[in-house]
Length: 473
Image (cartoon, rainbow, N blue to C red):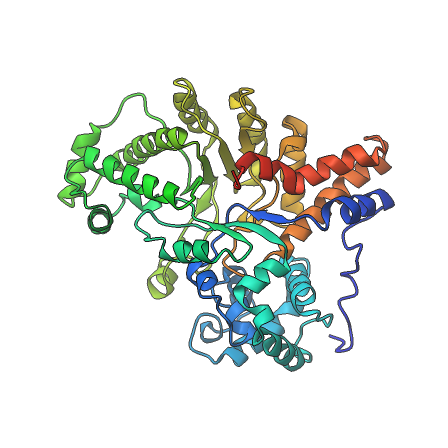
Protein backbone atom coordinates (compact mmCIF):
# COMPACT_ATOMS: atom_id res chain seq x y z
CA UNK A 1 0.00 0.00 0.00
CA UNK A 2 1.23 3.50 -0.84
CA UNK A 3 2.93 4.75 2.31
CA UNK A 4 2.10 8.38 1.51
CA UNK A 5 -1.62 7.69 1.17
CA UNK A 6 -3.73 9.63 3.62
CA UNK A 7 -7.17 8.59 4.80
CA UNK A 8 -8.63 11.16 2.43
CA UNK A 9 -11.73 9.06 1.96
CA UNK A 10 -12.62 10.13 5.51
CA UNK A 11 -13.39 13.68 4.45
CA UNK A 12 -15.75 15.92 6.37
CA UNK A 13 -18.53 14.60 4.11
CA UNK A 14 -17.70 10.91 4.53
CA UNK A 15 -20.80 8.78 3.74
CA UNK A 16 -22.86 11.90 2.96
CA UNK A 17 -23.87 11.63 -0.67
CA UNK A 18 -25.86 14.81 -1.30
CA UNK A 19 -26.18 18.39 -0.10
CA UNK A 20 -29.22 17.79 2.10
CA UNK A 21 -27.53 14.88 3.89
CA UNK A 22 -24.50 17.08 4.52
CA UNK A 23 -26.68 19.81 6.00
CA UNK A 24 -28.49 17.38 8.27
CA UNK A 25 -25.26 15.95 9.61
CA UNK A 26 -23.19 19.09 10.03
CA UNK A 27 -25.97 21.35 11.33
CA UNK A 28 -28.18 18.95 13.30
CA UNK A 29 -26.24 15.82 14.32
CA UNK A 30 -22.50 16.30 14.43
CA UNK A 31 -22.09 18.32 17.62
CA UNK A 32 -24.73 16.68 19.81
CA UNK A 33 -23.61 14.99 23.04
CA UNK A 34 -23.51 11.20 23.28
CA UNK A 35 -25.73 9.19 25.62
CA UNK A 36 -24.11 5.76 25.70
CA UNK A 37 -26.87 3.82 27.43
CA UNK A 38 -25.24 0.41 26.93
CA UNK A 39 -21.54 -0.39 26.89
CA UNK A 40 -18.95 -2.64 28.52
CA UNK A 41 -16.39 -0.07 29.62
CA UNK A 42 -14.61 -1.18 32.84
CA UNK A 43 -15.74 1.11 35.69
CA UNK A 44 -12.43 0.65 37.51
CA UNK A 45 -10.57 2.22 34.57
CA UNK A 46 -12.86 5.25 34.72
CA UNK A 47 -12.59 5.50 38.48
CA UNK A 48 -8.80 5.24 38.41
CA UNK A 49 -8.62 7.51 35.34
CA UNK A 50 -6.36 4.95 33.72
CA UNK A 51 -3.46 6.13 31.62
CA UNK A 52 -2.63 3.55 28.96
CA UNK A 53 1.03 2.87 28.29
CA UNK A 54 0.65 2.45 24.54
CA UNK A 55 -1.91 2.21 21.78
CA UNK A 56 -1.92 -1.60 21.81
CA UNK A 57 -3.23 -1.64 25.37
CA UNK A 58 -6.16 0.66 24.66
CA UNK A 59 -6.88 -0.52 21.12
CA UNK A 60 -6.22 -4.25 20.84
CA UNK A 61 -6.83 -5.71 24.30
CA UNK A 62 -10.34 -7.16 24.55
CA UNK A 63 -11.35 -6.28 20.98
CA UNK A 64 -12.69 -9.52 19.52
CA UNK A 65 -13.63 -7.74 16.27
CA UNK A 66 -9.94 -7.19 15.57
CA UNK A 67 -9.01 -10.64 16.88
CA UNK A 68 -11.34 -12.39 14.44
CA UNK A 69 -9.87 -10.47 11.51
CA UNK A 70 -6.30 -11.28 12.53
CA UNK A 71 -7.05 -14.99 12.91
CA UNK A 72 -8.72 -15.02 9.51
CA UNK A 73 -5.53 -13.60 8.00
CA UNK A 74 -3.51 -16.43 9.55
CA UNK A 75 -1.85 -14.49 12.36
CA UNK A 76 -0.76 -16.61 15.29
CA UNK A 77 -2.64 -16.34 18.58
CA UNK A 78 0.59 -15.26 20.25
CA UNK A 79 0.10 -11.85 18.60
CA UNK A 80 -3.63 -11.67 19.34
CA UNK A 81 -4.37 -12.76 22.91
CA UNK A 82 -0.95 -14.23 23.66
CA UNK A 83 2.22 -13.00 25.32
CA UNK A 84 3.86 -11.20 22.40
CA UNK A 85 5.11 -7.68 23.23
CA UNK A 86 2.60 -4.90 22.69
CA UNK A 87 4.65 -3.38 19.88
CA UNK A 88 4.68 -6.66 17.96
CA UNK A 89 0.92 -7.07 18.43
CA UNK A 90 0.41 -3.61 17.00
CA UNK A 91 2.61 -4.42 14.01
CA UNK A 92 0.51 -7.48 13.28
CA UNK A 93 -2.64 -5.37 13.47
CA UNK A 94 -1.05 -2.82 11.12
CA UNK A 95 -0.35 -5.69 8.72
CA UNK A 96 -4.00 -6.76 8.97
CA UNK A 97 -5.71 -3.41 8.42
CA UNK A 98 -5.13 -3.07 4.65
CA UNK A 99 -6.81 -6.46 4.22
CA UNK A 100 -9.96 -5.33 6.06
CA UNK A 101 -11.27 -3.31 3.10
CA UNK A 102 -15.11 -3.32 3.04
CA UNK A 103 -15.18 -4.54 6.62
CA UNK A 104 -16.28 -1.84 9.11
CA UNK A 105 -12.92 -2.31 10.87
CA UNK A 106 -11.30 -0.38 8.03
CA UNK A 107 -13.55 2.62 8.64
CA UNK A 108 -13.48 2.38 12.44
CA UNK A 109 -9.70 2.09 12.56
CA UNK A 110 -9.08 5.24 10.57
CA UNK A 111 -11.93 7.20 12.15
CA UNK A 112 -10.43 6.46 15.58
CA UNK A 113 -6.93 7.47 14.48
CA UNK A 114 -8.31 10.74 13.13
CA UNK A 115 -10.77 11.67 15.85
CA UNK A 116 -8.61 10.82 18.86
CA UNK A 117 -5.07 11.33 17.61
CA UNK A 118 -5.40 13.63 14.55
CA UNK A 119 -3.54 10.98 12.54
CA UNK A 120 -4.58 10.96 8.89
CA UNK A 121 -2.20 8.31 7.59
CA UNK A 122 -3.59 4.97 6.54
CA UNK A 123 -2.40 2.25 8.90
CA UNK A 124 -0.21 -0.36 7.23
CA UNK A 125 3.23 -1.91 7.85
CA UNK A 126 5.00 1.11 6.35
CA UNK A 127 3.25 3.61 8.65
CA UNK A 128 3.04 1.37 11.73
CA UNK A 129 6.13 2.70 13.54
CA UNK A 130 5.19 6.32 13.04
CA UNK A 131 1.58 5.82 14.11
CA UNK A 132 2.51 3.68 17.11
CA UNK A 133 5.00 6.26 18.36
CA UNK A 134 2.75 9.28 17.78
CA UNK A 135 -0.34 7.73 19.36
CA UNK A 136 1.59 6.27 22.28
CA UNK A 137 3.23 9.60 23.11
CA UNK A 138 -0.18 11.27 23.22
CA UNK A 139 -1.61 8.50 25.38
CA UNK A 140 1.00 9.29 28.02
CA UNK A 141 -0.43 12.78 28.52
CA UNK A 142 -3.34 13.68 30.87
CA UNK A 143 -5.51 14.57 27.87
CA UNK A 144 -5.64 10.87 27.00
CA UNK A 145 -6.56 9.38 30.36
CA UNK A 146 -9.91 7.60 30.32
CA UNK A 147 -12.00 10.46 31.70
CA UNK A 148 -10.49 12.94 29.27
CA UNK A 149 -11.19 10.58 26.36
CA UNK A 150 -14.87 10.46 27.30
CA UNK A 151 -15.05 14.22 27.51
CA UNK A 152 -13.12 14.60 24.26
CA UNK A 153 -15.96 12.74 22.52
CA UNK A 154 -18.64 14.79 24.30
CA UNK A 155 -20.01 11.75 26.15
CA UNK A 156 -22.72 12.91 28.54
CA UNK A 157 -23.81 9.55 30.01
CA UNK A 158 -22.22 6.08 30.17
CA UNK A 159 -24.14 3.04 31.40
CA UNK A 160 -21.80 0.15 32.14
CA UNK A 161 -22.76 -3.54 32.44
CA UNK A 162 -22.59 -4.99 35.94
CA UNK A 163 -23.35 -8.32 37.58
CA UNK A 164 -25.74 -8.34 40.57
CA UNK A 165 -22.90 -9.42 42.89
CA UNK A 166 -20.75 -6.44 41.92
CA UNK A 167 -19.95 -4.11 44.83
CA UNK A 168 -20.23 -1.05 42.54
CA UNK A 169 -17.39 0.45 44.55
CA UNK A 170 -15.92 2.09 41.46
CA UNK A 171 -19.26 3.67 40.59
CA UNK A 172 -19.40 5.08 44.09
CA UNK A 173 -15.92 6.55 43.71
CA UNK A 174 -16.78 8.05 40.32
CA UNK A 175 -20.01 9.52 41.70
CA UNK A 176 -18.13 11.31 44.48
CA UNK A 177 -15.69 12.81 41.94
CA UNK A 178 -18.33 14.32 39.58
CA UNK A 179 -15.88 14.70 36.71
CA UNK A 180 -18.45 15.72 34.09
CA UNK A 181 -19.67 12.51 32.48
CA UNK A 182 -22.44 10.68 34.31
CA UNK A 183 -21.40 7.03 34.85
CA UNK A 184 -24.20 4.68 35.88
CA UNK A 185 -24.40 0.91 36.47
CA UNK A 186 -26.70 -1.46 34.60
CA UNK A 187 -28.12 -4.59 36.23
CA UNK A 188 -27.05 -7.63 34.14
CA UNK A 189 -28.32 -10.78 35.92
CA UNK A 190 -27.47 -13.39 33.27
CA UNK A 191 -25.67 -15.58 35.81
CA UNK A 192 -28.73 -15.58 38.05
CA UNK A 193 -30.51 -17.86 35.59
CA UNK A 194 -27.53 -19.53 33.89
CA UNK A 195 -28.54 -22.97 35.16
CA UNK A 196 -27.12 -25.14 32.38
CA UNK A 197 -24.25 -26.02 34.72
CA UNK A 198 -25.66 -26.68 38.18
CA UNK A 199 -22.23 -26.81 39.86
CA UNK A 200 -21.24 -23.39 38.54
CA UNK A 201 -24.68 -22.08 39.43
CA UNK A 202 -24.46 -23.12 43.09
CA UNK A 203 -21.10 -21.37 43.23
CA UNK A 204 -22.78 -18.22 41.96
CA UNK A 205 -25.51 -18.57 44.58
CA UNK A 206 -22.78 -18.60 47.22
CA UNK A 207 -21.52 -15.26 45.87
CA UNK A 208 -25.04 -13.86 45.94
CA UNK A 209 -25.44 -15.02 49.53
CA UNK A 210 -22.20 -13.28 50.55
CA UNK A 211 -23.19 -9.89 49.13
CA UNK A 212 -26.80 -9.94 50.37
CA UNK A 213 -26.54 -11.81 53.66
CA UNK A 214 -29.53 -13.89 52.53
CA UNK A 215 -29.10 -17.65 52.80
CA UNK A 216 -30.46 -18.95 49.51
CA UNK A 217 -32.12 -22.27 50.24
CA UNK A 218 -35.31 -21.85 48.22
CA UNK A 219 -36.43 -20.18 45.02
CA UNK A 220 -38.17 -17.51 47.09
CA UNK A 221 -34.83 -16.82 48.77
CA UNK A 222 -33.27 -16.34 45.34
CA UNK A 223 -35.89 -13.76 44.38
CA UNK A 224 -35.41 -11.99 47.70
CA UNK A 225 -31.65 -11.84 47.10
CA UNK A 226 -32.12 -10.45 43.57
CA UNK A 227 -34.60 -7.88 44.86
CA UNK A 228 -32.02 -6.91 47.47
CA UNK A 229 -29.46 -6.25 44.72
CA UNK A 230 -31.96 -4.34 42.60
CA UNK A 231 -32.55 -2.03 45.55
CA UNK A 232 -28.79 -1.64 46.00
CA UNK A 233 -28.22 -0.90 42.31
CA UNK A 234 -31.09 1.59 42.31
CA UNK A 235 -29.49 3.43 45.23
CA UNK A 236 -26.37 3.82 43.09
CA UNK A 237 -28.34 5.45 40.26
CA UNK A 238 -29.09 2.37 38.16
CA UNK A 239 -32.11 2.80 35.89
CA UNK A 240 -31.60 -0.05 33.41
CA UNK A 241 -31.32 -3.80 33.30
CA UNK A 242 -29.83 -5.81 30.46
CA UNK A 243 -30.08 -9.46 29.42
CA UNK A 244 -28.10 -11.45 26.87
CA UNK A 245 -30.27 -14.30 25.59
CA UNK A 246 -30.54 -16.62 22.64
CA UNK A 247 -34.30 -16.11 22.82
CA UNK A 248 -37.06 -15.50 25.30
CA UNK A 249 -39.24 -18.40 26.45
CA UNK A 250 -42.86 -18.94 27.37
CA UNK A 251 -44.64 -21.88 29.00
CA UNK A 252 -48.32 -22.73 29.37
CA UNK A 253 -47.52 -25.96 31.17
CA UNK A 254 -44.32 -26.03 33.26
CA UNK A 255 -42.22 -29.21 33.03
CA UNK A 256 -41.98 -29.15 36.85
CA UNK A 257 -42.63 -26.71 39.66
CA UNK A 258 -40.08 -23.92 39.98
CA UNK A 259 -39.38 -25.03 43.54
CA UNK A 260 -38.64 -28.58 42.41
CA UNK A 261 -36.30 -27.32 39.72
CA UNK A 262 -34.49 -25.12 42.23
CA UNK A 263 -34.17 -28.07 44.60
CA UNK A 264 -32.44 -30.04 41.84
CA UNK A 265 -30.04 -27.16 41.33
CA UNK A 266 -29.17 -27.01 45.00
CA UNK A 267 -28.33 -30.72 44.84
CA UNK A 268 -26.16 -29.96 41.78
CA UNK A 269 -28.27 -32.23 39.61
CA UNK A 270 -28.42 -31.65 35.87
CA UNK A 271 -31.63 -30.06 34.59
CA UNK A 272 -33.44 -31.16 31.45
CA UNK A 273 -33.46 -28.64 28.56
CA UNK A 274 -37.11 -27.79 29.25
CA UNK A 275 -36.36 -27.27 32.94
CA UNK A 276 -33.49 -24.91 32.04
CA UNK A 277 -35.77 -22.92 29.76
CA UNK A 278 -38.60 -22.77 32.28
CA UNK A 279 -36.23 -21.57 35.01
CA UNK A 280 -35.01 -18.79 32.74
CA UNK A 281 -38.56 -17.86 31.77
CA UNK A 282 -39.91 -17.76 35.31
CA UNK A 283 -36.92 -15.89 36.75
CA UNK A 284 -36.96 -13.31 33.97
CA UNK A 285 -40.67 -12.77 34.45
CA UNK A 286 -40.18 -12.14 38.17
CA UNK A 287 -37.26 -9.80 37.49
CA UNK A 288 -39.22 -7.83 34.91
CA UNK A 289 -41.99 -7.25 37.44
CA UNK A 290 -39.42 -5.84 39.82
CA UNK A 291 -38.03 -3.58 37.08
CA UNK A 292 -41.53 -2.26 36.52
CA UNK A 293 -41.85 -1.42 40.20
CA UNK A 294 -38.60 0.57 40.05
CA UNK A 295 -39.48 2.32 36.79
CA UNK A 296 -36.38 0.87 35.10
CA UNK A 297 -35.90 0.23 31.40
CA UNK A 298 -35.21 -3.41 30.50
CA UNK A 299 -33.03 -4.44 27.55
CA UNK A 300 -33.03 -7.80 25.78
CA UNK A 301 -30.13 -8.66 23.47
CA UNK A 302 -31.47 -11.58 21.46
CA UNK A 303 -30.01 -14.01 18.97
CA UNK A 304 -26.31 -14.57 19.68
CA UNK A 305 -24.94 -18.09 19.25
CA UNK A 306 -22.13 -18.04 21.77
CA UNK A 307 -18.98 -20.09 22.40
CA UNK A 308 -19.30 -22.17 19.25
CA UNK A 309 -15.67 -23.33 19.27
CA UNK A 310 -15.21 -25.52 22.35
CA UNK A 311 -11.49 -26.02 21.74
CA UNK A 312 -10.85 -22.29 21.77
CA UNK A 313 -13.30 -21.76 24.63
CA UNK A 314 -11.31 -24.15 26.79
CA UNK A 315 -8.07 -22.42 25.77
CA UNK A 316 -9.03 -18.72 25.87
CA UNK A 317 -12.38 -18.55 27.66
CA UNK A 318 -15.57 -16.74 26.60
CA UNK A 319 -15.83 -13.38 24.78
CA UNK A 320 -12.72 -13.99 22.72
CA UNK A 321 -14.26 -13.96 19.25
CA UNK A 322 -15.94 -17.31 18.69
CA UNK A 323 -19.60 -16.27 18.67
CA UNK A 324 -21.91 -15.76 15.71
CA UNK A 325 -25.42 -14.84 14.62
CA UNK A 326 -27.94 -17.48 15.67
CA UNK A 327 -31.13 -18.51 13.88
CA UNK A 328 -33.43 -18.99 16.85
CA UNK A 329 -37.20 -18.76 16.56
CA UNK A 330 -38.11 -15.44 18.17
CA UNK A 331 -41.63 -14.21 17.44
CA UNK A 332 -44.09 -16.46 19.29
CA UNK A 333 -42.37 -16.76 22.67
CA UNK A 334 -41.29 -13.10 22.60
CA UNK A 335 -44.87 -11.97 22.01
CA UNK A 336 -46.25 -14.20 24.72
CA UNK A 337 -43.55 -13.21 27.21
CA UNK A 338 -44.20 -9.51 26.71
CA UNK A 339 -47.94 -10.14 26.83
CA UNK A 340 -47.63 -11.96 30.17
CA UNK A 341 -46.22 -8.74 31.61
CA UNK A 342 -48.52 -6.39 29.76
CA UNK A 343 -51.66 -8.31 30.76
CA UNK A 344 -51.10 -7.26 34.38
CA UNK A 345 -49.80 -3.82 33.36
CA UNK A 346 -46.28 -4.71 34.52
CA UNK A 347 -44.44 -4.22 31.23
CA UNK A 348 -41.85 -1.51 31.77
CA UNK A 349 -39.99 0.38 29.04
CA UNK A 350 -38.28 -2.24 26.90
CA UNK A 351 -35.55 -2.23 24.26
CA UNK A 352 -35.30 -5.26 21.94
CA UNK A 353 -31.95 -5.79 20.18
CA UNK A 354 -31.91 -8.24 17.31
CA UNK A 355 -28.78 -9.99 16.02
CA UNK A 356 -30.29 -11.83 13.04
CA UNK A 357 -31.24 -9.43 10.22
CA UNK A 358 -33.88 -11.88 9.01
CA UNK A 359 -35.80 -11.01 12.19
CA UNK A 360 -35.71 -7.23 11.68
CA UNK A 361 -39.30 -7.12 10.50
CA UNK A 362 -40.36 -9.33 13.40
CA UNK A 363 -38.91 -6.81 15.85
CA UNK A 364 -40.23 -3.85 13.87
CA UNK A 365 -43.77 -5.15 14.22
CA UNK A 366 -43.40 -6.61 17.72
CA UNK A 367 -42.76 -3.23 19.34
CA UNK A 368 -46.05 -1.92 17.95
CA UNK A 369 -47.96 -4.65 19.76
CA UNK A 370 -47.03 -3.25 23.15
CA UNK A 371 -46.68 0.49 22.63
CA UNK A 372 -49.72 1.60 24.62
CA UNK A 373 -49.52 5.40 24.52
CA UNK A 374 -48.24 5.64 28.08
CA UNK A 375 -44.93 7.09 26.90
CA UNK A 376 -43.26 7.97 23.63
CA UNK A 377 -41.61 4.91 22.10
CA UNK A 378 -42.13 2.82 25.24
CA UNK A 379 -41.08 -0.36 23.41
CA UNK A 380 -38.01 0.18 21.23
CA UNK A 381 -36.40 -1.74 18.40
CA UNK A 382 -32.81 -1.21 19.53
CA UNK A 383 -29.98 -0.11 17.31
CA UNK A 384 -28.19 -2.67 15.13
CA UNK A 385 -25.65 -4.38 17.39
CA UNK A 386 -22.56 -6.59 17.41
CA UNK A 387 -22.22 -8.10 13.92
CA UNK A 388 -24.81 -5.66 12.58
CA UNK A 389 -23.38 -2.34 13.82
CA UNK A 390 -21.98 -1.58 10.39
CA UNK A 391 -23.33 0.39 7.44
CA UNK A 392 -25.48 -2.34 5.88
CA UNK A 393 -26.75 -3.57 9.24
CA UNK A 394 -27.64 -0.08 10.45
CA UNK A 395 -29.43 0.76 7.21
CA UNK A 396 -31.48 -2.43 7.37
CA UNK A 397 -32.48 -1.80 11.00
CA UNK A 398 -33.38 1.83 10.25
CA UNK A 399 -35.38 0.84 7.17
CA UNK A 400 -37.30 -1.90 8.99
CA UNK A 401 -38.12 0.46 11.85
CA UNK A 402 -39.11 3.21 9.40
CA UNK A 403 -41.42 0.95 7.41
CA UNK A 404 -43.09 -0.75 10.35
CA UNK A 405 -42.91 1.74 13.22
CA UNK A 406 -41.91 5.35 13.83
CA UNK A 407 -38.27 6.12 13.17
CA UNK A 408 -38.91 9.55 14.70
CA UNK A 409 -39.32 7.91 18.15
CA UNK A 410 -36.06 5.91 17.92
CA UNK A 411 -33.55 6.40 20.77
CA UNK A 412 -30.59 5.86 18.46
CA UNK A 413 -27.08 4.51 18.79
CA UNK A 414 -25.15 2.95 21.65
CA UNK A 415 -21.55 1.81 21.76
CA UNK A 416 -21.76 -1.74 23.21
CA UNK A 417 -17.97 -1.72 23.37
CA UNK A 418 -15.14 -2.43 25.82
CA UNK A 419 -12.92 0.20 24.22
CA UNK A 420 -12.51 3.86 25.14
CA UNK A 421 -11.74 4.54 21.48
CA UNK A 422 -15.10 3.34 20.10
CA UNK A 423 -17.11 6.54 20.28
CA UNK A 424 -16.68 7.43 16.59
CA UNK A 425 -19.23 4.67 16.01
CA UNK A 426 -21.83 7.24 17.05
CA UNK A 427 -20.53 9.52 14.31
CA UNK A 428 -20.71 6.59 11.91
CA UNK A 429 -24.36 5.98 12.82
CA UNK A 430 -25.24 9.66 12.56
CA UNK A 431 -23.71 9.97 9.10
CA UNK A 432 -25.56 6.87 7.89
CA UNK A 433 -28.86 8.15 9.29
CA UNK A 434 -28.45 11.59 7.70
CA UNK A 435 -27.48 10.07 4.38
CA UNK A 436 -30.57 7.85 4.27
CA UNK A 437 -32.88 10.79 4.93
CA UNK A 438 -30.93 12.99 2.53
CA UNK A 439 -31.34 10.41 -0.23
CA UNK A 440 -35.10 10.29 0.40
CA UNK A 441 -35.25 14.06 -0.02
CA UNK A 442 -33.14 13.95 -3.17
CA UNK A 443 -35.43 11.30 -4.67
CA UNK A 444 -38.57 13.25 -3.82
CA UNK A 445 -39.74 10.76 -1.20
CA UNK A 446 -39.56 13.33 1.62
CA UNK A 447 -40.08 17.09 1.51
CA UNK A 448 -36.97 19.26 1.67
CA UNK A 449 -38.02 20.65 5.05
CA UNK A 450 -34.66 21.22 6.66
CA UNK A 451 -35.89 22.36 10.07
CA UNK A 452 -38.38 19.53 10.52
CA UNK A 453 -36.10 16.76 9.27
CA UNK A 454 -33.25 18.33 11.21
CA UNK A 455 -35.35 18.05 14.35
CA UNK A 456 -36.09 14.38 13.61
CA UNK A 457 -32.36 13.71 13.19
CA UNK A 458 -31.45 15.58 16.38
CA UNK A 459 -34.11 13.69 18.30
CA UNK A 460 -32.84 10.30 17.13
CA UNK A 461 -29.21 11.17 17.79
CA UNK A 462 -29.74 12.63 21.26
CA UNK A 463 -33.00 14.14 22.46
CA UNK A 464 -35.17 11.02 22.30
CA UNK A 465 -32.74 9.09 24.50
CA UNK A 466 -32.40 12.04 26.88
CA UNK A 467 -36.19 12.14 27.38
CA UNK A 468 -36.64 8.35 27.37
CA UNK A 469 -34.15 7.66 30.16
CA UNK A 470 -34.34 11.03 31.94
CA UNK A 471 -31.02 10.24 33.61
CA UNK A 472 -30.68 13.64 35.25
CA UNK A 473 -34.03 13.50 37.00
